[in-house]
Amino acid sequence: MDDRTTVICQTRNGVTLPQGDTFWLDNWPPLHFNCRSSVRALTAEQAMARQGRRGLQVMPQDFPEVGFGAAPQPGQEWFPDPNDFQPSIWNILQPRIAPDQPEASAADIVNPLAR
Image 1 (cartoon, rainbow, N blue to C red):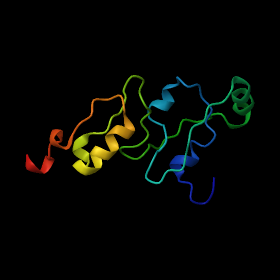
Image 2 (image 1 turned 45 degrees about the horizontal axis):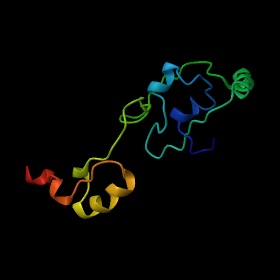
Image 3 (image 1 turned 30 degrees about the vertical axis):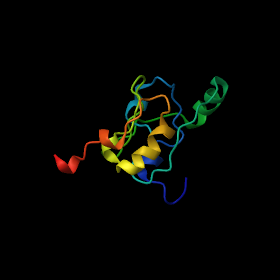
């Protein structure tokens, strides 16, 4: 941590909880704009060693900023919406991000401004 670490992140620094703990459902980085926090996996031995000195003592009372903090949900894969890109960009991007997905052409993209 340094002098740029926000209160939101300071209260979560060193939290050591199991992967399936409900805490992670709405405390998954990024927690705010320009958040530098991260989550890393620990072995059982590493977690036990940390628990004694840096476990979660008190549940943080502050909340991540709106639109931040949500953990990835199993089975909910994200795929970009072609409407968020210019057709020329999408035609370059699409084969690189999901070569096994059916390819969308510029003609398939709906212009949201034309609705």
